[in-house]
Each structure stands twice: as structure tokens, then as C-alpha cells.
Length: 224
Image (cartoon, rainbow, N blue to C red; front, side, top):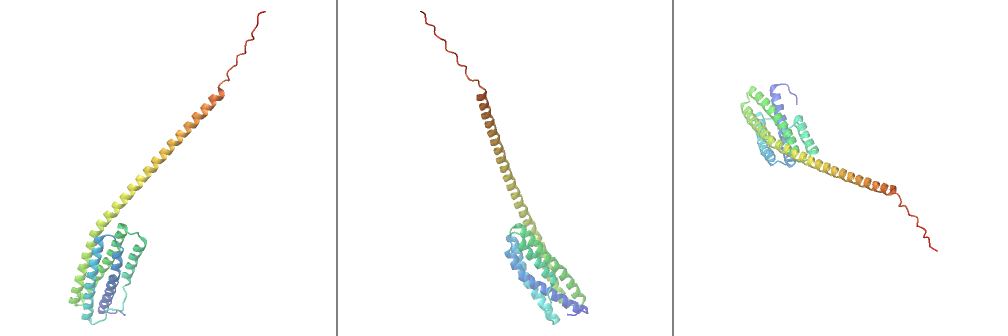
């Protein structure tokens, strides 16, 4: 749609928000399935229900304006969701993937926080107080969700660091065992070399030992 006035801009921005929330509703369940942390799953599922209510508020805003909600795709949210999908495909399941998905979810939240704040201010400037109030309610929910995700992230990061330290300790133990095995092998080789040297010395001594001298037999002289 052509945007020529602030009223046009408000409608265009509301359509963008509507598209963003519709995309989020579709992606949150997929993200939750890829997550190990129960706290993170609960946070996303709770926000999924909130998002459905946020869509209802946007529907009310379109009713007030007597305009349709469709007709626009939020390319920014589409790109953020694609980045989240890359995380699922590229990062192995576990706390590291959970940490990466928190980052993806918070990028989505930060985009929505910026968008809702901007559109609420615009609606207020145009005298659309009810719309501004509806958007303000959603804005506070988005901020609260972002804070919850930050708290969950602290626990997830601690878990990821703990697992990493355990892996490092396991690697060190394996290295120590390999070093012990190498030392034992070296000791065995040294013993084998010493045995070979002793055998060689024994053979040399046998070769150098002079043969016993045979005494000539005395001729017996008989008396006549």
C-alpha cells in the first residue's frame, strides 16, 4: 500500500506487527520442541499464549480503524525466524543449543519491543488513545518476556559451562591414562632392551672363555 500520511503509516505499521505476531505463533511450538531446558520451554509456551492475546488486541485496533489486517509480510520477523531455524539445524541438542535459541527468541522480542513502542507513540500522536493503550499493554508483556528469558539464560549458561568443564575433565583423565600407558610401554621397552643387552653380554662371555687345555698323558715306563 502507498504510504502518504501518518494515518497510512499507522495502518502499515499495524499490518507489519500483525504479520510478525502471526509468524511468531507458528514458530514458537517448533522452537519449544528443539529445547531441552524445561524452564525455557515453559517460558516460550507461556509467551505463545500471550501472543495469541496480542493478536486479538491488534484485531481490535483494525476494527477501530475499520481496516483489514492482512496484505503485508513482516520481512524483519521472517529473517529472525530463519536465523532461529539455522540454530536448530546447526547446533547439537543440549544447553548450548538452548542458549542459542534464547538469543534467537530475544532478538524477536527486541524487534517487537521497538515496533510496539514506535507504533504506540504514533497512535497517540494521531489521537488514537484506545489503540495506543492496546499496544502499550502488549509492549509491557514483551518487556516482561524479555526479562524472563534473561533469567532463564543465566541458568542455561551455567549448565552449558558445567557440562563443558566436565568434558574437559574427562579429556584430561583420558590424556593422563594415555600418558600412563605410554610410560608403561616405555618401561617395558627399556626392560626388553636391558634383557637383550644381558643376553648379548652372556653370549660374548661364552665366546671369549678359553677352551680347557688338555694335559698330555704321561707315558708309562716299564722296568725290566
